[in-house]
Image 1 (tube, rainbow, N blue to C red):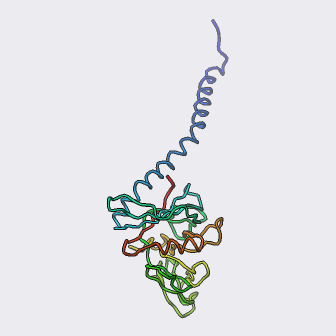
Image 2: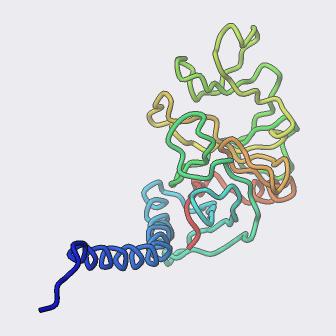
Image 3: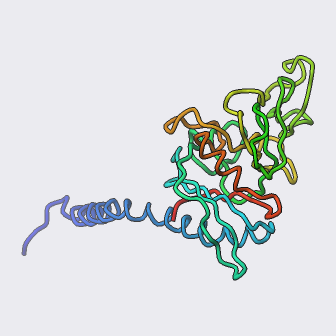
Length: 243
């Protein structure tokens, strides 16, 4: 009779566990890709439907390579009579939030994901020639309030007094990055305190310089995009993972 050592009864289970662990670890890289691919496929398939719900016939599509990416690529699509979409502008590099996309709260450094209407344009400069969007030239008295405790949260307010005495936090609209800008109507129907505010398309500080949550680009590209937007087509913006 062959006798087993006192520890032999534990040897095989340990070996099996090690093999199983090695197999699982080997699968992790592949498994981690599945949600991203699924999310990307879902975004590319769903934004036309969501744009349709909004009645949008123009959509600015912003694609990021990952949820943590702080850069992306922008295109402009227009709806055809047959229901398909034609690419009008493409390949425009953009800067996104410093912590990527999929915003959930105020100050998280993320750009919102999803589909939202675009609002009016504004800027410190005079209205660009040929612009169809409603445009307002800003002054030093224009602010966008990002104080969740204020009744003015996520609203544009003109105020002549000391803003520090009125709000705990606010965004000055009279600044170089807002020479030209377009409002992204995120968190405005209804406004949810603390969900996020002051999301715009605006000028970037540089291709490798992320934003606090907005979508930024070069001045020539922003003017080209703004000039192509037509309020009669109810323009919207769709932000998500690249397909």
